[in-house]
Length: 94
Image 1 (tube, rainbow, N blue to C red):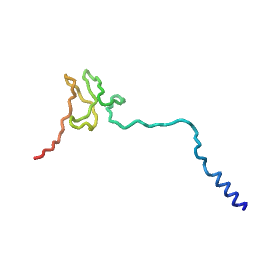
Image 2: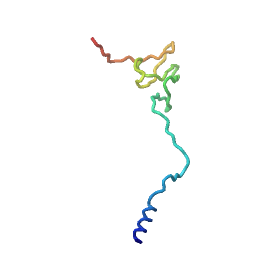
Image 3: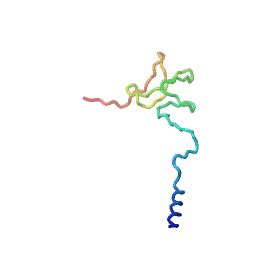
Image 4: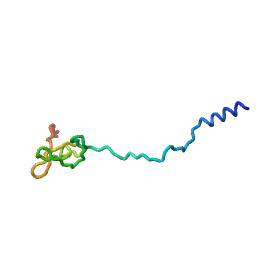
């Protein structure tokens, strides 16, 4: 009987106490992944404009008809519109 009591007490002491917190700080990780353009080790989101060598560049998606395509720096023309990259391979249906 004495051995059973010792084993029981030993087992109870090994069970960690639940609900014991070492601090009251809460960590929230709300930053979502989003596409960005990089310039001089800084992140820029879509629509950001920078000036480099007297030319303006905008951070925008690569292709006009694909808003989910990767972002890149595009030159702005005189009207302020981005000059987009032409798609190389075109699919034609007859």
